[in-house]
Structures are given as structure tokens and as C-alpha cells.
Image (cartoon, rainbow, N blue to C red; front, top):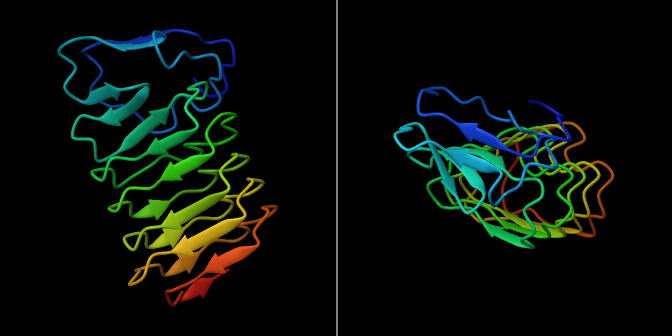
Length: 173
């Protein structure tokens, strides 16, 4: 369903047993309230306040592009987010990442309006273009972090004015 801009409603039946990450990226008309539903009996996907997660909530599958909340606090159970998870989101200005998040994928915050973020100690890699073209002006890395790599152009075209790097990064492309 990638970039199906006019898609407004989706019902995920109980028979769906595998749900690829990023499947609704670019579906800007998909309503976070009533447009996304999951049949009772689906044991692999969970919908919480307009956000799709794996049933055990260790993976964020989709954050509705038209969800009008300005901030989002990711549950600490989340370890994985998809590429372009918050890409071009026009309302979201603040995201608190899970303390168990392992990786920030390519394009995760590309073009987003977030202005500052704290990278949890659990994150081992920030992929290329992760924050590209976002409004990011301040970034802090949690003390004792495990970050080992920052991908090429991870912060390209941002508004970065302040970086608090409290970790040693082995590979900063």
C-alpha cells in the first residue's frame, strides 16, 4: 500500500499472520481514528490509539500519518521501528523513544517536524538519512550508550545547533 495517498480505510482481518513494516508509509489519508481497524481474533497485530504494533508490542508497525497529536511517547516495550516511521508527519513535533529501541532505520524521521530528541542508550545504530530534512535542532545521546555507527547523511539538511554526544561512535560515516 506504499504511497496510496487516497487510501482512507483498512480493515485487517484475523487471518493476517504477517505484517510487513512500513506497509502504510505514505498513506496520508488513512484515518488514525476510524480508518484503521483490526478484526477480533487477530493475534499478531494490535492497534493502540491510532498506532499499529506487533501483538507483543516489541515492534511499532505504523504510526498514522494524519494522527494529529503533537507528541508521542513510544512504549518501552518497542525495540523495532520501520523505515520512514515518522517520515513527513505534519503534526508530530516531539517523540520520546523507547528505552529498548535498538536501531533507528533509514528515513525514520525524514522531513519530520521534531526539533529535539534523546537517543536512548539501547540504540546501536542510526541509519543513513534517519533524520534527513527534519526540523531537528538538538540531539542528546544517553549516557552509557551502545551506539556504534551513524549512517551517511543521518542528519543531512537538519537544523542541528546542538549535539550532546556522550558515547564513543566506532563508525560515523
